[in-house]
Image (cartoon, rainbow, N blue to C red):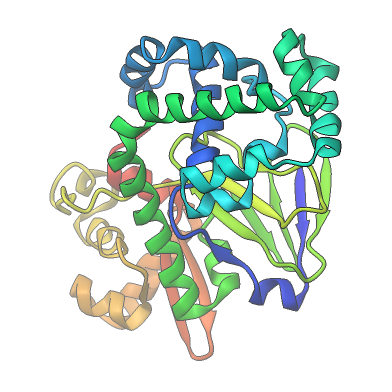
Length: 319
């Protein structure tokens, strides 16, 4: 279990990243190439990616194992400004930090000679690393980047809209059941038991196309706190008709209420858009909330309802 401890100042400094991070997507997509579990949305991409830029993949694979630790210097904050800025930051990593983080990686992994020299700050090894990162991104990620950006941007828009309208705590509730907000602690399933104290620095939440199942955090707690999570998308271009496949399960009215929550809405807005009375909207929202499909948060005299990831998947037709 990962527990991130907030103060009031941390809530004020918590935000969603402006877009997909090219180096986080590089590391996490490399991990997905190692993953043997079938996944319909990624299987075709894996087949194509395995045939592309094999030399770069062979070089990067020891640094980005499919399980466990990978060095924090591979995902610098500067990558938010683009791939080139991110790679430049990787190449400027201080020698002491390279030595420390590559030493941690070597504790559980067998590293090739060039990777061990990277830990010594060898400039040639760093240059080869920079070249491999560029080649991998160009051949494996660039063809997929429009899809990556679209998914991340839609997720970001949903979260930031909630944050702007009803506050950061309400936005943190939208991550359930993947993340659990119990003020002042944000909890997530995690491979190890760990507490992170934000200490007024806030938290950067980074939606990711290739992150799967559980969020990922930096190990080095002297760095700005980051939590990378799987971006979720509602495919608004193909709306689900309430009289369609969900109506026999939920009833026509409740299916309409659920579909109306493709956008976060107050109870009165829900009643207006779904075409039901205020008391009926409140009752349907309560039933959907108890089923884990909807989150409801109070903002002064209003209650705002948002879909949970389970509700999104039900409308989106995903398992």
